[in-house]
Image 1: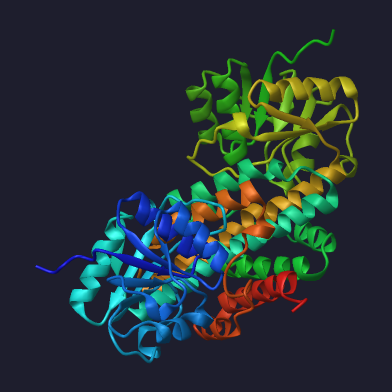
Image 2 (image 1 turned 30 degrees about the vertical axis):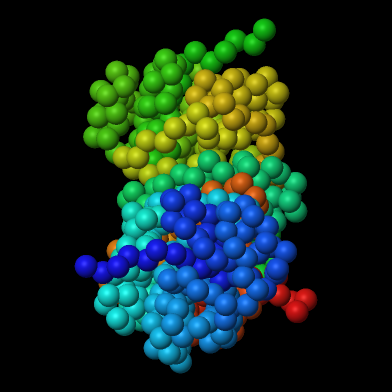
Length: 256
Length: 256
């Protein structure tokens, strides 16, 4: 039988790292060491989780270090860890084969959006696991299973595809909501007026699929309304309106 | 004191009309008459709600007729109703002053997306009410209040603005979800993998505002990831990716 991972270090205490540290701690898995560039932040989390703040990546001695830093810093942080420490990173877009490395390296990617000060229920969050060594992959899988019930193996190529779709579901949906908020502010109405509609939009698309959920002027190819709405917009909002309207029209109405 | 409306006719039994008929009926408000172009559908709803199917708009005799037809048919349907019948329509984009009319006409607009066979809890849905005659406006307000707790007066100009923001929140969000579904299908992974992320995206934006919720490669101005993702796309999805990415970059990173 494989030895399970007994102690964890977390490197990086931004949105992802701090939530993972908290989640492991809540689940009774010892987070033995914390590291981040911000020493004060590291100490405050170490106090909170009754664990140790380490000053240098080279001093880390846990069974595994989970690297929760931005994509551009992953390689650099990993290179500073002792070669004997098993390592996993949490990025959706970095491919395992693109890292130059010695020692065991794997992926521990939570498919979720994290923000400072906002606790997410990780139990429902998919964790995508990858490692070349099957024993190490199994250890990472078991570790994720302690904090989530949606753990799966996925290679780098597949993970990049899921990450791309996630950009549409998260980043772009959020930006549309930002534009709607801007319109509410510009036109002086309460943005929360839109929330029941937003909630039903998402529920409906998840239950019946987005293709059949589509409604609105572009779906009906209602050019009068489309032109009137375009005329009310300017700048980026207008460009987004035009591109999405064109795409909806061509999805549904090109056969007309 | 104003007499309240005692009996309702519904003209049009599409997604909106059928749900309004059901909601009034559930709330114990008599829906006396139903009309739609589809006689079989009209009869089946009349049976279901223990009410009367009328063959011609000119035969309607209820206190009020709520016209739930597509924007392009609203004027035509209203013109066929007896002049003595009070009338309201459910469109978000038709302005009251653009209708040529005799008799009392008002707006009874539910800010929600409706789909066949999918029942919506109207109680949380904002109803936007407008009529030139203040007594009639009050009657429409009271009528909406029987089925919703979010009723408000709003003039045509304001309603058009809310409707425009609603297009971003509903039509465009839904189309983004459609594109994510297409990617899942093309790349052969289970689209439901994206749902916890989608749910958190929406919850977070509603709780803390979409501006501070933004994450992702465009938010970080991470050109490596952006270029790699663009290269994975083609056609409309690529165009949407480019326009939204550009807009996010200019919202957050132009000062860099």
